[in-house]
Length: 145
Image (tube, rainbow, N blue to C red; front, side, top):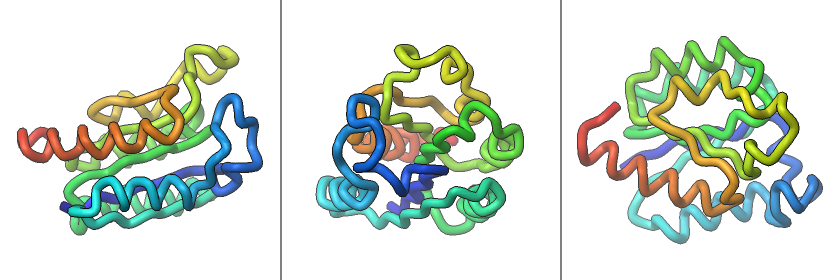
């Protein structure tokens, strides 16, 4: 199984951000954890602070990948364009957020992008990515996109 993992703005700074929300690990730590835990799958990891680059990855994903995991960062609350790209993308998609958004400031309570995914995971820090891989496996097995 091939899975694309997209991380949005500021996630390249994990390890430097508020540890109470995001943990003390880096993005590379998360990538290694995923690869080690699910060594039977192929992963491609992509991070960008640029909305258009994220959209390009989403648009190209169905041609190369069985599933998509996305942490759109702050774009989750603002990007109609990413939402539209996710809506068009016809492979299983799970949105992940490291922090528990329901415990954060109210601007983070509204997710624009999540409704265009099969579901979302929030508040489990790096473990949320592992849960997302498991869910992608199940959605692919069940032929749900």
